[in-house]
Length: 180
Ligand SMILES: Cc1cc2nc3c(=O)[nH]c(=O)nc-3n(C[C@H](O)[C@H](O)[C@H](O)COP(=O)(O)O)c2cc1C
Image (cartoon, rainbow, N blue to C red; front, side, top):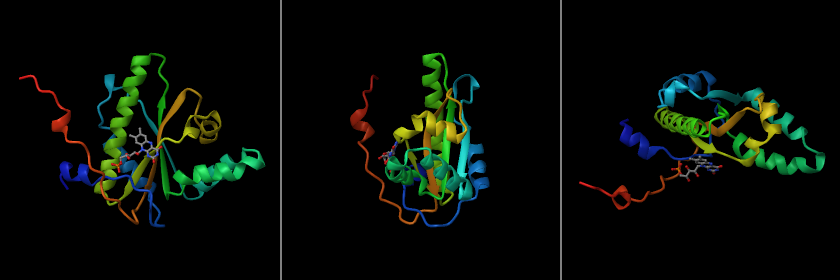
Protein backbone atom coordinates (compact mmCIF):
# COMPACT_ATOMS: atom_id res chain seq x y z
CA UNK A 1 0.00 0.00 0.00
CA UNK A 2 1.29 3.50 -0.74
CA UNK A 3 1.65 5.95 2.14
CA UNK A 4 -1.25 7.92 0.66
CA UNK A 5 -3.54 4.88 0.69
CA UNK A 6 -2.46 3.79 4.17
CA UNK A 7 -3.12 7.30 5.52
CA UNK A 8 -6.63 7.28 4.09
CA UNK A 9 -7.38 3.74 5.27
CA UNK A 10 -6.28 4.22 8.88
CA UNK A 11 -9.30 4.57 11.12
CA UNK A 12 -9.74 4.29 14.85
CA UNK A 13 -11.14 0.83 15.46
CA UNK A 14 -12.45 -0.54 18.74
CA UNK A 15 -14.24 -3.71 17.61
CA UNK A 16 -11.76 -6.56 17.44
CA UNK A 17 -11.88 -10.28 16.83
CA UNK A 18 -10.86 -12.53 19.74
CA UNK A 19 -7.54 -13.36 18.01
CA UNK A 20 -4.46 -12.64 20.07
CA UNK A 21 -1.81 -10.25 18.82
CA UNK A 22 1.78 -11.44 19.08
CA UNK A 23 3.82 -8.92 21.14
CA UNK A 24 6.79 -9.62 18.85
CA UNK A 25 4.78 -8.20 15.92
CA UNK A 26 4.21 -5.03 17.94
CA UNK A 27 7.90 -4.69 18.82
CA UNK A 28 8.84 -5.21 15.16
CA UNK A 29 6.45 -2.42 14.15
CA UNK A 30 7.72 -0.14 16.92
CA UNK A 31 11.23 -0.62 15.54
CA UNK A 32 9.97 1.21 12.43
CA UNK A 33 7.78 3.71 14.30
CA UNK A 34 10.80 5.02 16.24
CA UNK A 35 12.07 6.61 13.02
CA UNK A 36 9.74 9.49 13.96
CA UNK A 37 11.42 12.90 14.07
CA UNK A 38 12.53 13.80 17.59
CA UNK A 39 14.53 16.86 18.65
CA UNK A 40 18.18 16.29 19.61
CA UNK A 41 17.56 12.56 19.25
CA UNK A 42 16.16 12.47 22.79
CA UNK A 43 14.02 9.49 21.67
CA UNK A 44 11.63 10.36 24.50
CA UNK A 45 9.67 7.12 24.69
CA UNK A 46 9.38 3.66 26.09
CA UNK A 47 6.66 1.09 25.68
CA UNK A 48 4.56 -1.23 27.79
CA UNK A 49 2.61 -4.06 26.21
CA UNK A 50 -0.31 -5.63 28.07
CA UNK A 51 -1.89 -8.76 26.66
CA UNK A 52 -3.07 -12.20 27.76
CA UNK A 53 -2.58 -13.01 31.45
CA UNK A 54 -0.47 -9.88 31.99
CA UNK A 55 -3.36 -7.67 30.89
CA UNK A 56 -5.86 -9.59 33.04
CA UNK A 57 -3.60 -9.38 36.09
CA UNK A 58 -2.99 -5.67 35.59
CA UNK A 59 -6.71 -4.89 35.27
CA UNK A 60 -7.63 -6.92 38.34
CA UNK A 61 -4.84 -5.31 40.42
CA UNK A 62 -6.02 -1.87 39.29
CA UNK A 63 -9.68 -2.56 40.05
CA UNK A 64 -9.01 -4.14 43.43
CA UNK A 65 -7.01 -1.05 44.47
CA UNK A 66 -10.35 0.83 44.66
CA UNK A 67 -12.92 0.67 47.46
CA UNK A 68 -15.50 -2.03 46.77
CA UNK A 69 -18.25 0.51 46.13
CA UNK A 70 -16.21 2.15 43.33
CA UNK A 71 -15.07 -1.03 41.62
CA UNK A 72 -17.89 -1.58 39.13
CA UNK A 73 -17.63 2.01 37.78
CA UNK A 74 -13.86 1.68 37.48
CA UNK A 75 -14.22 -1.70 35.80
CA UNK A 76 -16.53 -0.17 33.17
CA UNK A 77 -14.09 2.70 32.58
CA UNK A 78 -11.02 0.56 32.19
CA UNK A 79 -12.84 -2.06 30.13
CA UNK A 80 -13.36 0.48 27.33
CA UNK A 81 -9.66 0.41 26.40
CA UNK A 82 -8.60 -2.92 27.91
CA UNK A 83 -11.22 -4.93 26.01
CA UNK A 84 -8.69 -4.88 23.13
CA UNK A 85 -6.61 -8.07 22.81
CA UNK A 86 -3.47 -6.00 23.31
CA UNK A 87 -2.93 -2.58 24.84
CA UNK A 88 0.23 -0.60 24.18
CA UNK A 89 1.14 2.24 26.54
CA UNK A 90 3.44 4.92 25.12
CA UNK A 91 5.43 6.34 28.01
CA UNK A 92 7.48 9.54 28.00
CA UNK A 93 9.76 10.99 30.69
CA UNK A 94 8.67 14.36 32.14
CA UNK A 95 11.09 17.06 31.07
CA UNK A 96 11.90 19.93 33.48
CA UNK A 97 12.13 22.28 30.49
CA UNK A 98 8.61 23.13 29.26
CA UNK A 99 9.64 23.64 25.62
CA UNK A 100 11.59 20.39 25.58
CA UNK A 101 8.61 18.61 27.10
CA UNK A 102 6.32 19.97 24.37
CA UNK A 103 8.79 18.82 21.72
CA UNK A 104 8.97 15.40 23.34
CA UNK A 105 5.17 15.13 23.29
CA UNK A 106 5.16 16.10 19.63
CA UNK A 107 7.78 13.44 18.89
CA UNK A 108 5.70 10.81 20.72
CA UNK A 109 2.64 11.86 18.70
CA UNK A 110 4.62 11.41 15.48
CA UNK A 111 5.70 7.96 16.67
CA UNK A 112 2.11 7.01 17.50
CA UNK A 113 0.86 8.02 14.05
CA UNK A 114 3.68 5.99 12.49
CA UNK A 115 2.62 3.04 14.63
CA UNK A 116 -1.08 3.36 13.70
CA UNK A 117 -0.17 3.47 10.01
CA UNK A 118 2.06 0.42 10.38
CA UNK A 119 -0.78 -1.46 12.12
CA UNK A 120 -3.06 -0.64 9.18
CA UNK A 121 -0.51 -1.94 6.71
CA UNK A 122 -0.16 -5.14 8.78
CA UNK A 123 -3.91 -5.88 8.70
CA UNK A 124 -4.18 -4.92 12.37
CA UNK A 125 -6.12 -2.00 13.72
CA UNK A 126 -5.97 0.33 16.67
CA UNK A 127 -7.32 3.29 18.54
CA UNK A 128 -5.47 5.99 20.47
CA UNK A 129 -7.09 6.58 23.88
CA UNK A 130 -6.31 9.14 26.56
CA UNK A 131 -8.72 8.36 29.42
CA UNK A 132 -8.26 10.55 32.49
CA UNK A 133 -7.07 7.66 34.67
CA UNK A 134 -3.75 7.41 32.75
CA UNK A 135 -2.70 10.57 34.61
CA UNK A 136 -3.33 9.07 38.03
CA UNK A 137 -0.49 7.96 40.31
CA UNK A 138 -2.46 4.80 41.06
CA UNK A 139 -2.57 3.76 37.40
CA UNK A 140 1.09 4.66 36.82
CA UNK A 141 2.21 2.91 39.97
CA UNK A 142 0.43 -0.36 39.14
CA UNK A 143 1.83 -0.15 35.60
CA UNK A 144 5.33 0.15 37.11
CA UNK A 145 5.96 3.76 36.08
CA UNK A 146 7.62 6.46 38.12
CA UNK A 147 5.82 9.71 38.90
CA UNK A 148 8.36 11.33 36.54
CA UNK A 149 6.81 9.58 33.54
CA UNK A 150 3.78 10.47 31.43
CA UNK A 151 1.50 8.03 29.61
CA UNK A 152 1.07 9.79 26.26
CA UNK A 153 -1.57 7.35 25.20
CA UNK A 154 -2.98 3.87 25.36
CA UNK A 155 -3.22 2.22 21.98
CA UNK A 156 -5.88 -0.47 21.69
CA UNK A 157 -4.63 -3.10 19.23
CA UNK A 158 -6.30 -6.08 17.61
CA UNK A 159 -7.48 -7.66 14.39
CA UNK A 160 -10.48 -5.62 13.25
CA UNK A 161 -13.89 -7.24 13.39
CA UNK A 162 -15.47 -4.25 11.76
CA UNK A 163 -13.66 -1.33 10.14
CA UNK A 164 -15.55 1.96 10.34
CA UNK A 165 -15.66 4.23 7.31
CA UNK A 166 -12.97 6.90 7.42
CA UNK A 167 -14.30 10.26 8.64
CA UNK A 168 -13.99 12.98 6.04
CA UNK A 169 -11.66 15.92 6.66
CA UNK A 170 -11.82 19.59 5.73
CA UNK A 171 -9.93 20.30 2.55
CA UNK A 172 -6.42 21.63 3.14
CA UNK A 173 -7.14 24.02 0.26
CA UNK A 174 -9.65 25.81 2.52
CA UNK A 175 -7.21 25.96 5.42
CA UNK A 176 -4.14 27.21 3.60
CA UNK A 177 -2.85 30.72 3.03
CA UNK A 178 -0.32 30.97 0.24
CA UNK A 179 2.09 33.89 -0.07
CA UNK A 180 3.70 33.59 -3.47
C1 LIG B 1 -4.12 12.88 21.34
C2 LIG B 1 -5.33 12.07 21.01
C3 LIG B 1 -6.12 11.56 22.01
C4 LIG B 1 -7.24 10.78 21.74
N1 LIG B 1 -7.99 10.29 22.76
C5 LIG B 1 -9.11 9.60 22.51
C6 LIG B 1 -9.91 9.10 23.58
O1 LIG B 1 -9.58 9.25 24.76
N2 LIG B 1 -11.04 8.43 23.27
C7 LIG B 1 -11.42 8.23 21.98
O2 LIG B 1 -12.48 7.63 21.75
N3 LIG B 1 -10.66 8.66 20.93
C8 LIG B 1 -9.52 9.34 21.17
N4 LIG B 1 -8.74 9.78 20.14
C9 LIG B 1 -9.05 9.36 18.75
C10 LIG B 1 -9.84 10.41 17.99
O3 LIG B 1 -11.12 10.57 18.55
C11 LIG B 1 -9.92 9.99 16.53
O4 LIG B 1 -8.63 9.91 15.98
C12 LIG B 1 -10.76 10.99 15.70
O5 LIG B 1 -12.12 10.88 16.01
C13 LIG B 1 -10.60 10.77 14.19
O6 LIG B 1 -11.05 9.48 13.83
P1 LIG B 1 -10.09 8.46 13.08
O7 LIG B 1 -8.92 8.17 13.99
O8 LIG B 1 -10.93 7.25 12.82
O9 LIG B 1 -9.64 9.12 11.81
C14 LIG B 1 -7.60 10.53 20.39
C15 LIG B 1 -6.79 11.05 19.36
C16 LIG B 1 -5.68 11.82 19.66
C17 LIG B 1 -4.82 12.36 18.53
